[in-house]
Length: 164
Image (cartoon, rainbow, N blue to C red):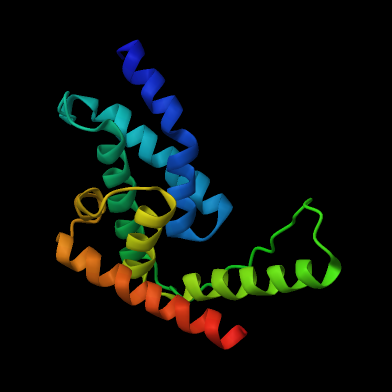
């Protein structure tokens, strides 16, 4: 393997794991997906076209592996535990509790979004991908990604407004 490509793949690992975690909503499952993705990418590196974005190609592999696994899984209603924000910042107790509650509500709301909306939102809002890149990764049109993100943001806005 080309040493430069190896460096790019290694640098991509934290972002890939974060993306895998957004898909699987489970740290162990995210680790498994990230590992399977890298294995698949290395095995099929000859199919990657130099000059194109290696990270987008690898994200696409992760997305496809996840979709295939979800299709094969019989039970899809596993819930993940809400992640509470632990902060070392100097917030007073009331503000810290309010922040944790709001974070918990938003995290739970993101987890309840339909998979397509959650994926599109996290690719754009968390990973900083363009709508075009998110469309390429998910195999959807840019219009579909735009619509999914708009619906996801509206759902999250409603949760935040309800929580205070």
